[in-house]
Image 1: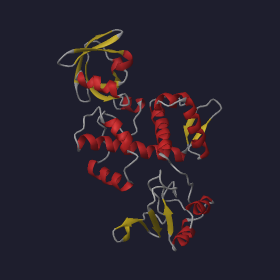
Image 2 (image 1 turned 90 degrees about the horizontal axis):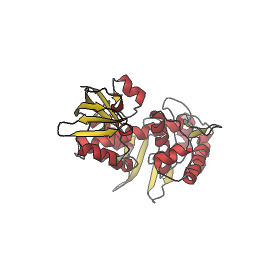
Image 3 (image 1 turned 30 degrees about the horizontal axis):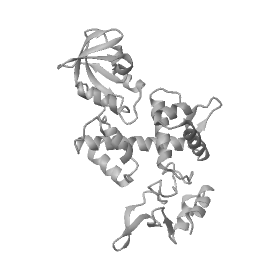
Image 4 (image 1 turned 180 degrees about the vertical axis):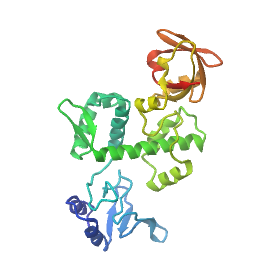
Length: 302
């Protein structure tokens, strides 16, 4: 039976109990790499040495098909609801756009096509095509002024990816010892490759509520940082002593420069002078940062 035909059935809002009956005879799904996954009532299976082997009991009656870039999702927006809300094909490209929108919003930006072009370093025509696909799948909304916002489903996907990215960054430093300024780019790739099962195990191992190697929470923002008593380094006073709490993580070259100068989360700094630049003493040398660079470093009182 075709997954596309079943998707049409689900998109009509069929109740979970009705769809459970539909699953009793099994549903076969073929992903683009040629592996056959068989969905049966109450469990999720994958090809194994002895045929199809269960890999996860169903939490809800309807399993959620993982690996979004390979399969059509049978999506429950909330496990407690009794209907299937939507079904869309989520690619790595779509995930990146949704995450970029959420990140730009969290940094206080009004998200427009030009914002995404700058944020993702892609051409305006590519952004235009991506926006059309995201609107078609009801993942974003675009108003008359071209401002882009996430729909509930789009925000759910972006939040899941941000949490996964956060966990992977922590794994790379806390378990594998990778340098803090390298982990963001590695996590950008790995966040699309790990399974939900691996993500759950990683969360169990690392625990929640902790900052990433750059000192940021999974869903962070300037407002949230200020509520925690942080402020940008550009706002310090002359002769003030501060401790680095977090750093904007999307600029690898900037992170490497800071690391070479001994400026990283947890380090204490002494403010030497405040003018057009911020002069700080790291213990080994005096470093002068332009205010635009200092705005990317958040500190707390030492």
